[in-house]
Image 1 (cartoon, one colour):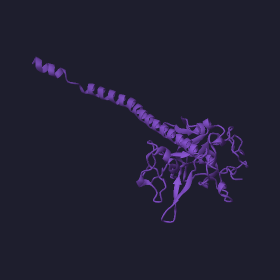
Image 2 (tube, helix red, strand yellow):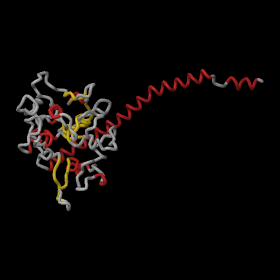
Image 3 (cartoon, helix red, strand yellow):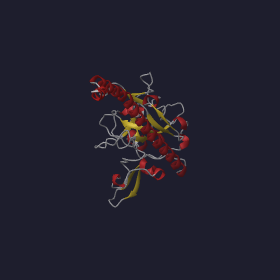
Image 4 (cartoon, one colour):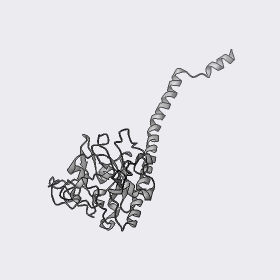
Length: 295
């Protein structure tokens, strides 16, 4: 009888079990977000490393090409098909990082158009089935190549350098043209120009706040992303990297999905200063000959 009584006294009651389950649930609710944040922090570090590699690759490229910035897109060798290779900035910098697309993901003509792996993609933004995110890191080509900014990047078909957001094949500018390398963006993480959950695709070029404001949604560029707990990694012209929120350096989407440049002037007639951290001028002003987009 005594042995049987001792065995019964060691058993948990229903209330005790429920209390233990509740404690475990509370601990899980506290710890799981911490684990998720730690995982995201690791992914952010991965992206910072990618930006660092790309920034140093650009500096090495400039060292080999008379202090000239890399192009966004270039024509390669003539192929048996009669077409030229279509080479992106990913191709041109690949010799310095050796971490572009796998052979199976290259364009048949030889171009590294869709580098789904490597330094051009973020682990927090996997490439989906429709390949809507071709690149998740992009290049400040509108300023670091010889694109004419005087028309606020609205296409003017009178000459190639005035093609604005379509002037993909302009040569790179001299690094000496950048008046403040430590505060001029070279690469940053991007998202779709119609928002993170939009339908537009991203490619290898940054759509600066001014270009987005004056041209609207574009399918082949991207705006600064804050996919790492609201912030994104940046590679600067001088080679250093940092993490910033989009509205600290570029702009962001508001509650209704409208893109709002962070540095839009309070003067409704002015479109200056929007590209403060992309422009080559030290004061952040753009060489614009108009007070309105494309005028």
